[in-house]
Structures are given as structure tokens and as C-alpha cells.
Amino acid sequence: MDTVTYSNFQRNLKAYMQKVNDDADSLIVITKEPDNSVVVMNKDDYDAMQETMSILSNHKLMDRIREGDDQFAQNDGHQQNK
Image 1 (cartoon, rainbow, N blue to C red):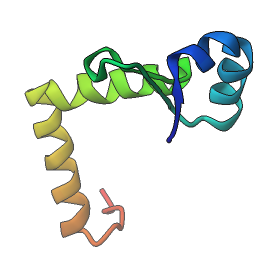
Image 2 (spheres, rainbow, N blue to C red):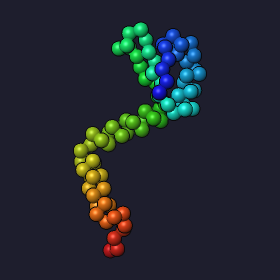
Image 3 (spheres, rainbow, N blue to C red):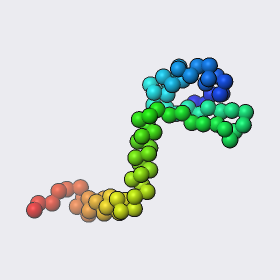
């Protein structure tokens, strides 16, 4: 993850936005006040992160995923004949 100063980011906004989208790598924009720093990421990565967080916070869904993982492991990855 690259880091850039706010003033440099502001001067070269279009280029940095293109780089974030092309490289699919986030960018940290730092300021003189560390609490005001931000992370810039492309929208697809942001959407994927939000979806992952939503799934991980859904306890019923995570229980079902774990149950499926256990079933898969018990069958050694093979489909059972019905």
C-alpha cells in the first residue's frame, strides 16, 4: 500500500485515482494531523469488503457456512450418492 501526502494527492488526484483503479491497491493519504489521514480504494474492492463484513457479521449464515465446511471435510470432498 503506497502513501502520499494530502497536497500531492490533491495536485494529482486524477492520476492517483487511476492508479488505485488500475493496480487494485489502496492508497494512504496522510496529513500533518495523523488522525485526519484516509485510505483510498477502488469501488470494487470496497464493495467486496463490505459484503465480506456483512457475511461475517451474520451469525446464522456463518453457522451454515461452518456446517457446510464440516460436511465437506467429513466426506473428504466427495459427493455422496443418493
